[in-house]
Length: 298
View (tube, one colour):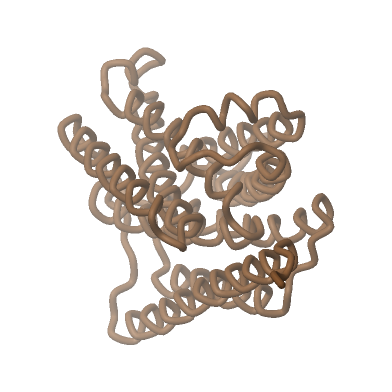
């Protein structure tokens, strides 16, 4: 019995979203018990490696990554990355179960608007697969270099910003988006044989940017107030990077009539509003926690 590739991609993407959502909450549980380090400091990973919950989260993340690779190998980049926004729902549910943290109505409203906006935009644009060959070697190096530069600049700025967690999470989302693009390219290279990816820079750029993105995600999970507030910008920016890459390099197509573009713009507004609500709710909760934890001076 053969399995239709059109079914494998979305099912794998949904399962990947569930695993990624669960991994974020498990890793946050470990990160909250670890000492605080500056964004990008590798000592955080060394500390987390001694925590059982971090390894549980890492195992879930690896399973999610494998499912994502399978989905990318069998379906359009835009579809797969769009379905991964389901991680927001999984994160909300797992945060309630594992951390006993009940989301506020503003967080739920923000998550709902974010999901509605991104799903609506992808549905309106109706992405379809193409026959593109992906970025060339020099283009991969340029893309990876530009992404690394943005990530370093964001980390430097975030160290002096009160929105540190959100900035690092947004930076992580861009990094994960570029890694997904590179994984898609590695999948295309595998069609030429198991050794073909080793002759293309996409594999090496994936390892480097992937490791850096994972480190930043741990910083964001530790500094942010709530896993949902951290995961939301990651999962929004990740598929948006895939949207651009799919159109530019992989020959994927979207509907572009005036009506469709109008709906896409409206959904983008909802998406931005949803992200803003989640971020504002997280900052409000963080201020409340700080006031409770700090005794009043006499």
